[in-house]
Image 1 (spheres, rainbow, N blue to C red):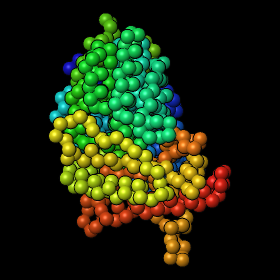
Image 2: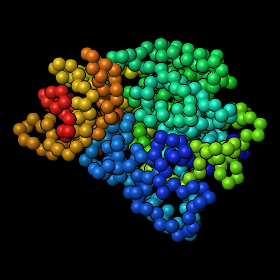
Image 3: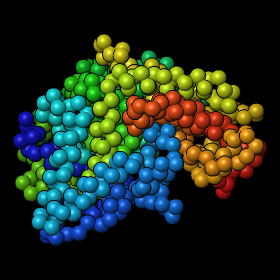
Image 4: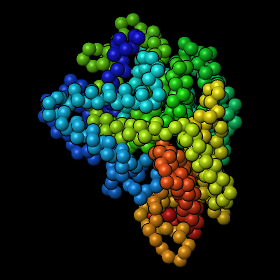
Length: 529
């Protein structure tokens, strides 16, 4: 394989500084060829878990990052916010501790660069195996500090052959990661956003969205531009766009002018679905920090052999992907976004994520399907029957795979809702207050027995913009299933019933808090927890 011969993807990761917009690479990212000698002592595990991911991974005075997560497990926090991020679990933290001790032992005899390469390659191999991709030939896996950086890498690779960045056609930024649009434009490219929801937040007809994608691609191709279509599986509110049929049609119509990246950073898809995307020749971005529930900022870009071959064949004469000293430097002058840095923080976060994925893969698919089906039915019934909520609709999850009706990834795992009060909907500030309050230590407002008691805290998905109602912007919260919850439900002793009851309790808490903040009036929630 040509890219493998050039060592593209075999031993690489991404540098946040080189990719832009993610904050400087900290002192733990040791540049290839400049690593210290043996005998290095690692910083603390806690420091590593919050390093090598840019500014967004930093902790504030409360010990949390911008997603409300710290470095330690929080057993009193019910994790239903995996569409945003999850607090590290006890099992994930223990796995990171074991790896940390192993690294410390080995750093006495080997250089950090050598130790890092061994662990990075092991993580790549385990990720491929646990994701069900061992049968995919010549698959390239690029580890990245986040899904955002994986997007930037794909854009750089598509634009590298000519030096002209591609035009990126994708869904509206409100439904993707907050930093994704910036990453897609980080090398000077243009972004063509396609709305997938109506102004009031309802989902547009899927056929209309597909038609807009096709029209945008046709317009750019006729203008002589290279196009990168970024398909989202799934969006913040649980949508797939464009449809699988549209995506394959676009790739077939313009094979020489178009590349495809599937944003599967939520990682809410089965191994069969993942193999189908790669088999179609599409690059795929994933993370270990959403459905898998590993700590924030662990990403990967998967490049199938056909896509790698396609990129290689477009290279102009005299262009080389790599040099002997740096496998990720484009040998054409200027800085490369792809570097081989020793990022032990990334290794630690991926190890915690892989521990979650190992446990999830031990659960039979029929059990996964059964629990997610029953959980979805209970959550949707509650959201539709309680007037406190306005359930946000989503299209059926269809990836165009024949005979896939019994796959667990056809069941929705993100449930979006707006909060109502007697006069309308909560505004964004009020919804954010509910979101923060549910995670805060405090007394339960839902205890109607007359007493007041300490309550379980709930982490939901962060508020996401969802249109305009009655002339004002509104945002939606999200309650989300995850691999960790599936594993908990599969254990003996009635865990499934407990988790379904917990999801219902979280919704009741949100409804009660919405009534409290509504009584405060406009602006009453500012500065209040």
